[in-house]
Length: 159
Length: 153
Image 1 (cartoon, rainbow over the protein chains, first blue to last red):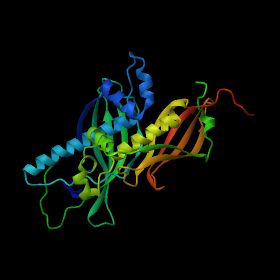
Image 2 (cartoon, rainbow over the protein chains, first blue to last red; image 1 turned 90 degrees about the horizontal axis):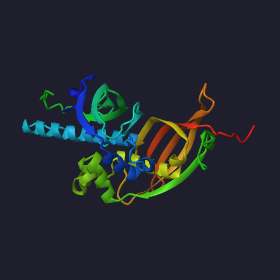
Image 3 (cartoon, each protein chain N blue to C red; image 1 turned 90 degrees about the vertical axis):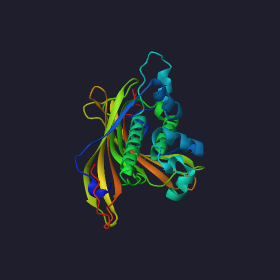
Image 4 (tube, one colour; image 1 turned 60 degrees about the vertical axis):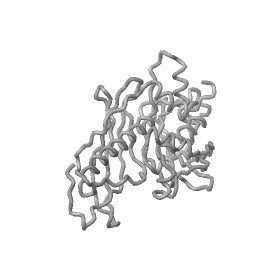
């Protein structure tokens, strides 16, 4: 799958993550002591750190790509590794994620352009998380370089 | 909170440094197995060819920034809203053995219009390694309460 195969506006479903109390607290113990303080009240429904909600989305993206890579390999086609991500912009958490919530993640290419590097194109994606009530719990924008199709390779894997 | 931090405690242009966290192989791999299981984050052998050795997931560096911010001031800050993150750039790899700290600068202070008791503070955080190089930047906004008993005026 190459830069040329990216379709603007075609959203890819990345699957779901359920946020258990244990997972929210485990992230809090390592990175956000405010969650540990919340947990002192055993009846409190813990809220996940925003960065935890985003990192869990990265896991969905990596797993989805791994599955796609395996499927393509069966057809003798390849999926390039993701490059190291340069970062993101405009991350918002309109609704909190609380224990028991199930978040569905998706990624949608919103723009693409060729770059000065002949082998690479730049794709900007909107990444989203929606809870089981349809509320947006995560949205951000990220740009990634994707390899362009080598000229000698005439195949167009249909995705 | 007797030692709470308010809007007025983060004046424009203020720069402070804090934190200090050692990044280990085990922590890089453990985080990546949970959140970012790509070979250059989880497998030293594969990482050697791809990235010249194991590197931390950017989401891990972001999480370490969160922890250092909590320990330095977030747990004491009178936060009304963590509006989100304007921008993150992971500009240098973080590798095992790196020691990271934070340099924080106040980029803007905006009293909330129509609400005298609150204000927004925009921060630039730089995550700096042991060589003084900036591995990551984050720009983000906090909505804070204003001090309940103004000291001046």
